[in-house]
Figure 1 (cartoon, rainbow, N blue to C red):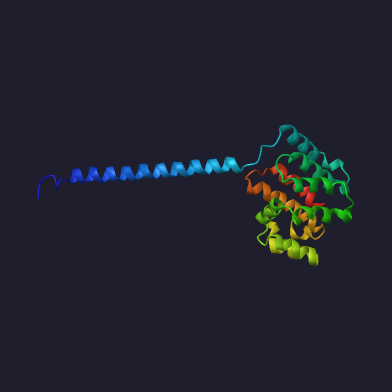
Figure 2 (figure 1 turned 180 degrees about the vertical axis):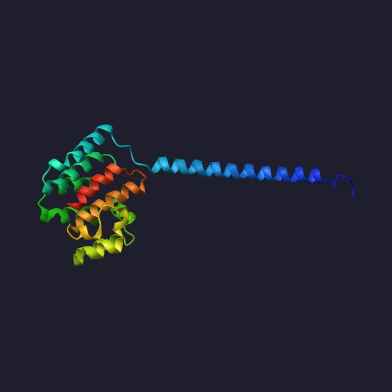
Amino acid sequence: MSDADDDPLADFNAAARRRKRLALAGLAALGAALLGLRTWWVATALPGLEDEAVDAATQAMDGLHTVPDDQRAALAALAFAELEEERLPLPMLEAFRAVAAVAPSQVSLVALEPFAHDADSLAAWSVVCDAGPEAITTYVANGDIDQLFADCSLGRWSLIDGHAARRVSGGRLVLAHAAWGWLVDHHSETELERRILRVFVQG
């Protein structure tokens, strides 16, 4: 056996070179993955909120104490629609505008309309409700808010609790949570939007 074969320093240096090559390969793979993630993040994000719309919505929420209780949900619906002009699927956007203009007895029907035909609205709902569209169908059939809230675990989104949900229409519950699901799915949600949806859903 030659001296080179027995040289521990040579063995150490060779092992170090192998580790360096592996580390560089790992860093390259990580860099590619991060670049891909950033590309996906940018591609799937919603357009940013307009400053003027943010200011108007913030002022509306800050002045909520001056608005009669029975008009607050309508104000929140209009503020949300204005804020989400370029961000929300059109059927949901139109539903927020419409519920602000109809009688309380019609709110649930109008709020549920997007989920009868619009794929994006149904996809948004499925983000917040693992039971998916079937949960809406079941609610329409039996009117059981408790079941809808429980089957979808809606409490985890912190828009309304199960006790308060019993006092609102199922349509309002579905529309608010689907809107939040759309924002979450596009990693574009803000605390202002959560604040407005809380006012809207709680009626």
